Image 1 (tube, rainbow, N blue to C red):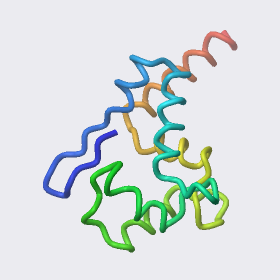
Image 2 (image 1 turned 135 degrees about the vertical axis):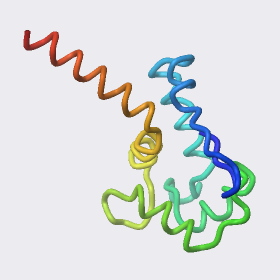
Image 3 (image 1 turned 90 degrees about the vertical axis):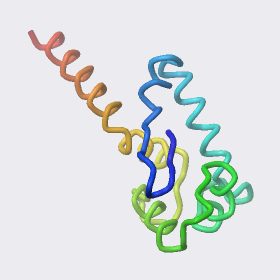
Image 4 (image 1 turned 180 degrees about the vertical axis):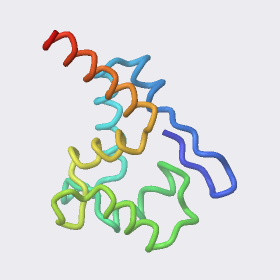
Amino acid sequence: MAITSDSDIFQDFLPTMAAQLGAEGLMEELRKGFRLLMDPTKGVITLESLRRNSAAALGLDGLGDEEFAGMVSEGDLNGDGALDLMEFCVLMVRLSPELMEGSEGAVSQALATTFN
């Protein structure tokens, strides 16, 4: 997934990665991304670890605390103020409309096959 400045267009690479790597390969890449952004002592992505690590990993050095806090809160499903690996992976998939559409199609097809 490529995130660029406000003036650039967001380009979603997650569907391409999924097609090329398969499910296991994609999950491994998401785990690598998580490890780049996480606080190594806490094992989760915190506001501070995202702020500290995102400039180098994602090129987001121009964002402020409000934007970083919004990113964490967007994916924080359990309300603890941080992202664990599962929350990070869910967020990445949710932020990929094309991947979500493909997943929806696969689930629909599986259900149709199972119940017809």
